[in-house]
Length: 130
Image (cartoon, rainbow, N blue to C red; front, side, top):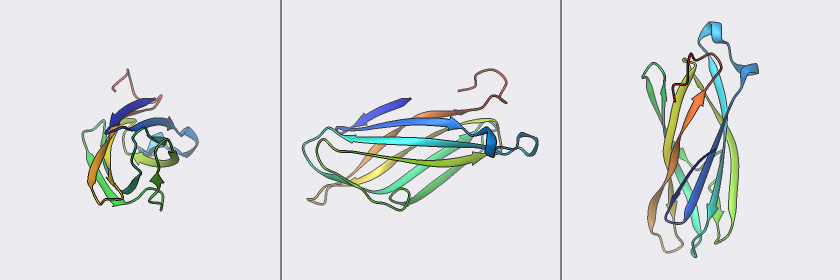
């Protein structure tokens, strides 16, 4: 697990290599990742958008931006949490993901919450790259 806290919003990322969906002979490697967000602050926040940077072992970086996560823009009241699982595919047996979530308070204050960099490792990568 990989964890980072920004402005009392804790983000934990847990990646998982999906061998059953990967095709190493075709340079196609798939991971799921579960994100758990917890609001330790005293103000509700809403996750309104996401920005990911995904870099594979070959040095190729893809950026992904969009509204919310998995079709939702969850509100986290103080003490509440939200969890979701999504996935990504790479053309290399390992990589790294990092990013941020755009948040907004009921007063309209916008801020970013960092997602910790987390490694995407598979048994097909020689050594431990990340």
